[in-house]
Amino acid sequence: MKKKSLSAKKKIHKSLLKYLKNKRINKVFKEFHDKLDFFLKRDSKNLLNMQPKFVVAVSGGPDSLALAFLSKCFLLKNKINPYIKFFIVDHKLRKESSREAKSLKKFLIKFDIECEILEWKGRKPVSNIQAIARKHRYELLKKACKKNNLTNLLTGHHKDDLYENFFIRMLRGSGLKGLTSFADPSVELEDNFRIIRPLIKIQKKN
Image (tube, rainbow, N blue to C red; front, side, top):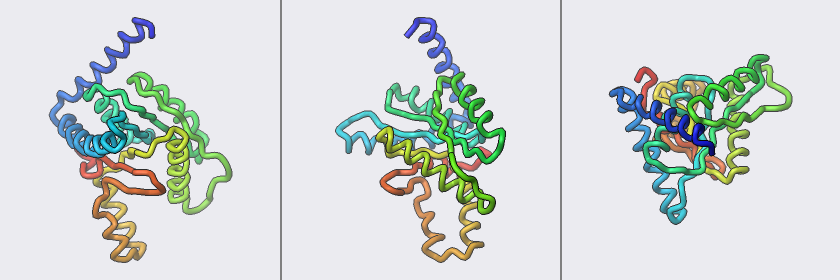
């Protein structure tokens, strides 16, 4: 690596960590750090002290951008170099989606966060679009995880998402079992993958 490139990266890293001096941001980071540290340390023990491995799902929304920022700070703060991947899912449901995904990727490079774009190809639905898009989004992310031998998937869901999903399930007539499935919303096992939501106990306004 060229000295100039290394110097530029160090400058970027220093500027990112500087934001943690803000009390509100540092409070959110501490909660994020403690939650993620718990799962990844457990992995390190199970894998004979191998470096932790995880995937970060990124979109253009403020929640996932916060997740990308916090994940990067977590790595810098702990001075570790795990096998980490950042993915952007391009659903191709709108004409602008591919351009937006590329713009997001370019934007994140400024913060030394390199993303790979996953494209949802094939016919698109005309009804129940959000639910079907979610299904395909997770399928793409899981496929990418398998390809890279990763099992931890981080998402940017927060406390407001938890309330929203609870009422959606209630209005749809979900039974007691469905409603009580939120007992531990910060982690979910699905098809041998662990979906970790380190921000789930944090409200969006924070």
